[in-house]
Image (cartoon, rainbow over all chains, first blue to last red; front, side, top):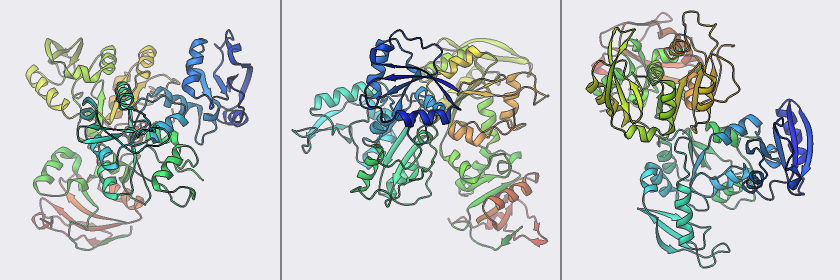
Length: 286
Length: 251
Length: 62
């Protein structure tokens, strides 16, 4: 039985009912103590509360919710975004454990950033809003510290798109390329890279990539990371191979797109809590 | 038993080289012999390991390939590696830290391991009835209680610290103190285990009921007897691979 | 089904039967390819002699 306080932070209540149902289920019952909106929560006693369920959290994102909570002197560790409770595999224990574990996701592309976003977790890695080629990423993982200690240098601009109208910057890090797709300028990209790399928690990391190439999978599989995940479109007996069935998501245009759509939550193929906490494959019924 | 026999070649044809009587010799020696004989060492399997609770070939091979490094407050890491026939990839064997100093060490293991070990004093090892060297590492003491010679201890410490795999760590200690447990629980390690003789809600608290093993007197001895394979409280494969509690005894 | 070569490195056979039983159960049967040891031995399972390969004759594939 958990004592729950509802905090309406936007008027988006899509996930409220689902979240309450799930909490009721995983916590052996809930006791709804009170319901407040916006800044009215200031001064509400939270000592006895187990969970502050933040209703409408998804439209502003957890990092902003946390900022608001800090200003109002709310206990951060009790916050729970409503949509997170609705994710498959959610239990309050696992989620709190994941938050406390200070995981750093070393990710080949947006997957790490998107999944962090989906789970309302802060980024603790420079590998967000950018991508590596699969070959470069494996090279990077052979000596992450060496690469992270080197200075990224601007190399060129690549094709332009809505997020980077003049083309996005490609940086060189020794002999590998960082494709900083979501940055407009090289300075912004380098600045973020440097700032984020300082946040890595080397004592709890997971390496995540995808490939369609069995040889690259083998190389990745041989890396000595405790937690490592490589999404592949084929069956494999390698421990780190996580098979994505290409028949599930008919709207995906390529394997990369399939993985992106996974990271946006269109199709969640595996229990993300088990994946990030334990590197355990728990396939979900889709 | 549906066992069939046929003569065939070792290479290609054999999945497992089951080493019978392996516990007498130890897996590290067997691996050495196998290398000299050009036997494929990734196929070796000590017979006693198969008989450990929770064993499956897949999990064991995964554990071997994961190149786990165990940072341990005392003998636990060395003992459990031995029980599982795994090589040591950590300098924290044959020695111990005091609880508070181990916590300090864990706040910055890389930094401490770069410190030069300095001789502090000799201390008395009660069980072995001899003196052992105590070494200073920055501002913490390291008790090399299985050594008699300072130089020897430092030589082995330095050799072993070079083998740490920072990307797959398992951190373990034990304590009687709730306060120490609480501090340990906040450390940002993916796999961390603190054995305690009391029940606790904290993720990293692994309860050992002191009533179960009557031959052990302290939490330290319970834990060492667990690591030595005398009594298995938890599935050691789940513990080392995933940091996951799978109790094998109702406590 | 797993193919297994037995290598006797000492005469401590305490774990032998247990290990064989567990592996057989977990892999739906075993296929014992042969036995080798530092000295010649003859092992019987279910009353049948297990093929003994002298240690220096184990084909290691170069």
